[in-house]
Amino acid sequence: MSADLQAWADTFGRRAGGLPGAGVPWLAEARRQALDRFMSEGWPTPRIEAWRHTSLAPLAAAAFEDGGVQSVAERIAALKAGETGHWLVFVDGAFDADLSDVGALPGGATVLPLSQAWSEHAEAIRCAYGDAADGHSTSALNLALASDGAWIHLVRGVAVEQPIHLVCAAASPRAAHFLRHLIQAEAGSQATVVEHYVGVPDAANFRHAATRLRLDRDARITHLKLQQESGQAWHLGDIDATQGRGSIFTSHSVSLGARLARHDIATHFADERCETLLNGLYYVDQRRHVDHHTLIGHEKPHCVSHESYRGIMADAAHGVFTGRILVAPGADGTDAIQRNDSLLLSRLAKSDARPELEIYADDVKCAHGATVGRLDADSLFYLRSRGLDEVHARDILIYAFAAASVAKIESEPLRRRVELAVRALLPGGAALEEAA
Image (tube, rainbow, N blue to C red; front, side, top):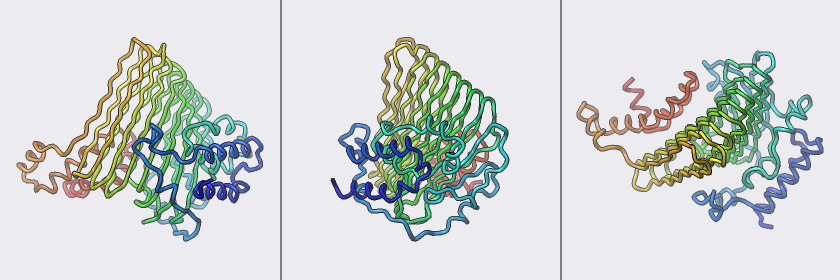
């Protein structure tokens, strides 16, 4: 056994007894099976087609340890300032009651950390938790070591008006933590869930987050993931949704931080007339790397999916997008559109785009495409002719490219939150503020 894998076996040995639900027999067995799978398969490598453009070798060689905790209270307070909602805060993978503020929820809505939900919702959690065979070997490591997460359960017809915020902060500069969020929306229920990942400056921590959603008939869930880890951190994440008849799932994935970020996002149409929007925006500079890998399973007739991801790569950064739309036999009436657009800001920046359609039905309307390019010379000339210098003209065009994704976020407070995050990071943000 390699030393890096043995280190994770040792970590499991130290942590297993203190994980939430450690005394639940089926969960202890599931965790053991998940660890066995990870130890057997190891880290995914570029020899695996799904990881062809993403190497986890630096992550596999890294060592992680707790300690050196920095305060994140001020940053959490800044995130909450001026925004309403229901807040669950997790620091280094553990629920922080002092920083959280769930507030008043409508009857039939449950929002709890998993560490507290086991006592009253054990059977429902078992049905939603997943098993060791799900996803990649990294997903199995998450199941084995997940220390906490959110349990969100909406009964039939309940609507949560204000967003449910799951703030996940890293306070230790070299720690590894795993979170598992479970969202169950019964028929006709509605909610918006925000996952926000933040780190301390220059921290080289590792975080894996798995989110599993089930939407029953006519349920509506909007999910926003905003990843702002430290530029030296590793972030891996899975989002897996199953949709019932007439349900609507909207996913916004905004990835702005981490030295390496990988997002696996999938939704499966388990009944007819489902709808989904997968919307993504990512920015990487220096030598950072980001990979989005999506799957939309059109398994039933008359379902609609729209997918659009936009990436901005600067310096010697690398952006990857692989999107797969699978139309099963009998899924007639499918309407699926997929698009990936990449903007390269330097000669060394790189983009790999692989849009995929796999169709086994006849009566469908499907399209996919990808573009990779640089800033448009004619647009630059137009802005220069209107009195802008070259720097400001470039900056405004860069932000305009990103804004096409941001505009798809319907909630004004959440859209503003993403706008501020993008403006603080992208070259075009400062210019836009000056123009405003």
